[in-house]
Length: 449
Image (tube, rainbow, N blue to C red; front, side, top):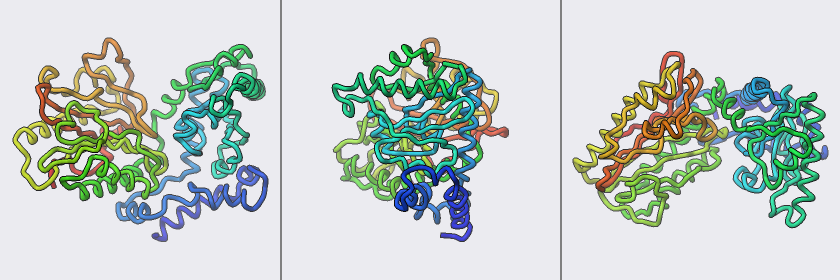
């Protein structure tokens, strides 16, 4: 580890390891304090090989306390803009945004055993799974940690109505204490009878995802630093995948290489299993299978990777497997898909409307070629607002808005003939700046090499 990076990590740890917020979380035993401070995985940091690879690439690490405060400030501003007294969050990606804390991210997504509250004046409470309060000790934006009252049937069984009632009473008490007469509470998702119980207690429940997507839309300086690190880690894992591919491997064997590289480089999970070969590349959206990949076939994949610092790298590549020369049809399909990316990348400038993106984007003849489900979409911690639909979908599902500096979008491209044959999937990740679009991913798009 370089002295510069080591100093950066040490300074970040020291800034909040000695804070009063950390010390008062938990039972005060040395083991608890250690777990909340130097033993916490976010305090330990990403480690190797990330640090050496990022230093070689000239990347700067994000200042995590500054990033946490930026996110909380944006969320509070949006609560005030939408006239909510507070917001209750169950989606672990929203909890991560508001608090920069994690705990069994995918598990709590369907068990309702972890949630957070943010008031319109910035008071933050995390309710965490049994005996895991220490997992919040690293984040200075958290004011309180409480034990979660889970109302999923798995955890509550036939007592779910009774337990849900206790949960609702506690939430109502928090609303009365922190919302100063404003009974409007934004909520992203609720388990069990939550909506009905809160309504009976006089709480007006609003659509929390609107608040969160608008808050997450504009990335701060340190979020972009974190994203650059996550993308670089993803790219290194993609190179390992590319070097590993051999005819005779199954799709799942190839896909496991990306998963391994992501975990080794401080990544968290991969949202999908979108990897396909040969005839399974068209139509697109096939998940990785036990099929053996043959010499001269195309292999296409979409990373959908939640990487270091919880930031997403969402890019796609299509490779030629083996040492054969690509066929004229493979070359043609790849050229069309590449042209789509190049043309549509140039549209990503501040002030561009979502409607103009839909109607001015390059799109191969839909009668001849299958295409992807959207033209562009936002990306941050995962796929995010906005989703820019195809022209044919505009009347039914399109919505307007405007690109702003600080937004990050992907440019999507899939090309596969409707009369059969293979398909090509490509995708790049782009930062909107005042000076125009900046591509954040960097590996070549070529079929070979």
